[in-house]
Length: 483
Image (cartoon, rainbow, N blue to C red; front, side, top):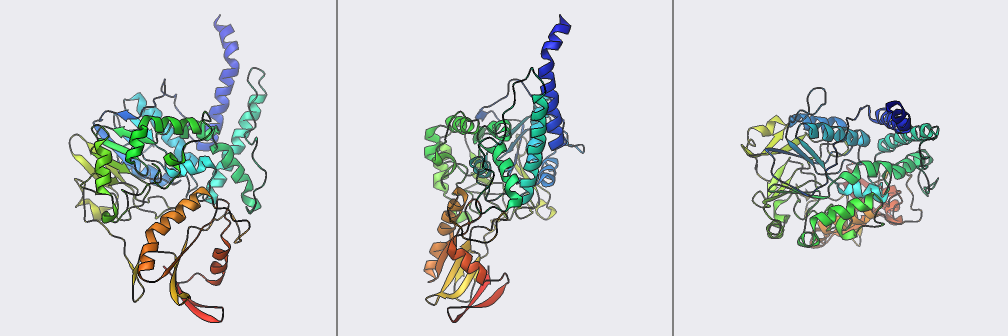
């Protein structure tokens, strides 16, 4: 009887072997068995020790430094946090070339922690949502290479499974994906296709990893979210938000509300409580939101880089933990937030210059954004300040980003989701200051595949990159500087 059962199970055993082979080839990790059943809940009681880590953006080395700083992994990169709870607030994807390795590594820690009473909770940031949408505006070329490597191994695994008569024939992962993209350099096409295949709704990586992420979370007295939560999000229902995002990622729902994940006021894009300038945080709104979530005392967010390190605003009700640690961001020194019954809230930092003043969290004096002085006015940072560009007025030119995947050209300009949101944020941030000082504020946005609005092509071609230059346009000299 045992022999008969073994023979019947051979196809499943073979499939499991192939999956393990592919996983190791991609990640160099042997994943332990997953907990059964998998846990997916919106609210947890307070653990004895809670660690929160901000945006990781494709930098595995910095991710491990942060985890080691918190005492959650040992020298062999194995879970050493015991019964601790770890919350990573999203944005594993984009800006780096080790996104998959981080996803696999966090999955390994989830499984190891569960066996000893610990908990690792991962969340969706705006960059996870962008990638599921197929918006790769912030993807690094090395990220395309990593996904191309995954797709090659995954395809090999599928071909191996097709050799077994007892297994259902795997579907082609590239089914329905174009073989070319207007404006995208040929050298990046395969990477684009692999990334779409992996991360689109029902894609293997989206379903396996991103669908397990929370979008909003409550742990004890702390509310976790990548961007922020507004009163109408609470009224909509935190569990409902998690379910609808998960169902969209797994393909059970065709769409998810833009108000939840794509609008400027959505839970993964909001910056109302994370602006580095304390005066710009809407503390009264935050207090109202926390009052509507039973037991909540604080909101912990990533999304907005805090150049001075982890900090708090609104009487410690808004905790901002994105320190831009990825090399693809500002290469900041890793810091993590610790919440424990014994010592309350503390910042654990790898920057010794800050240690002496921050043992008990919170707070060194709030770091403010340094203004830009042009001799007669103070402006917030834009990309280029052009002196006397339009009708003698200075022009604040803000480029949302230069895609590494395309040559400079206008093509048929169609702005992608990320570009539109970035432009809106830039306008809100800079326009009033520019108008007040009689400047003209201009934004140029790249779409998903790198096309630039025609005016943006024109001005970038005229302006060589330097600290300060002169250019001639329409028979007049225009002085500009990169700011």
